[in-house]
Length: 159
Image (tube, rainbow, N blue to C red; front, side, top):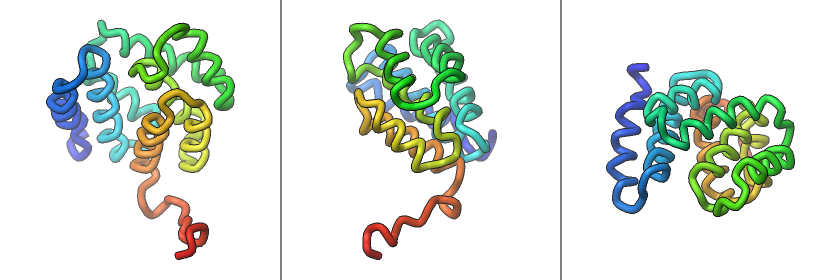
């Protein structure tokens, strides 16, 4: 993984997150930074997520919740399933918490695969902190498919 530098990404994320976050907030930033860095060197989001997990403590709640999402995601078919699973698993948790939104991001990646439009649209439709979840899911899948394979939407915006 020499060219992707997930360890360095997690280190820099820690420095940034420590200013305003604690515990799982810090781990979330480290996890997703490492996952995003890893995405440049793998061909699917699950591999990127698993590499991201190596940069946070196995004993933290986020690690356990990401493992739950990876297992539960096998049965998640769309944004409705994803949101229901998260609402049930994280009953009463704030809609802007790291752990529940991390799981929605993972579900969006699992549902959409390498279809960038599907990943982003399904993740947005899940709700909660969807500007952040969709941006993270989109950046991971975008890094995986690469600039040349992204759908050219210039015709939609008049360019």
